[in-house]
Image 1: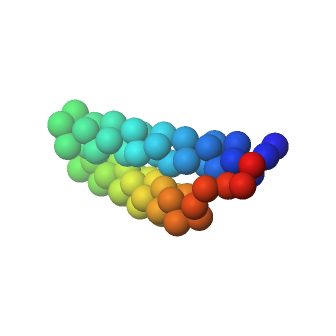
Image 2 (image 1 turned 90 degrees about the vertical axis):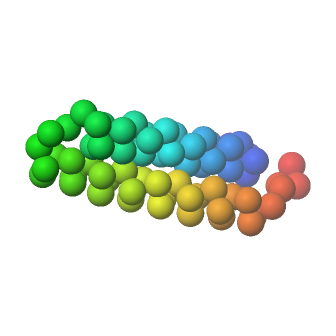
Length: 67
């Protein structure tokens, strides 16, 4: 697999993490009534959001590929 294709899949996973974190934050704020479940889903969502931000940040800083 070429480096450009690898970067594409990594950035797509970062965007997927962002979508999952949005859904989890929505669930934890508006749908769940249990405090423990709300906390767990919010923590997972913020971890995924942080990971997605780091992935996108490094992909953008890496610049274009030569292939």
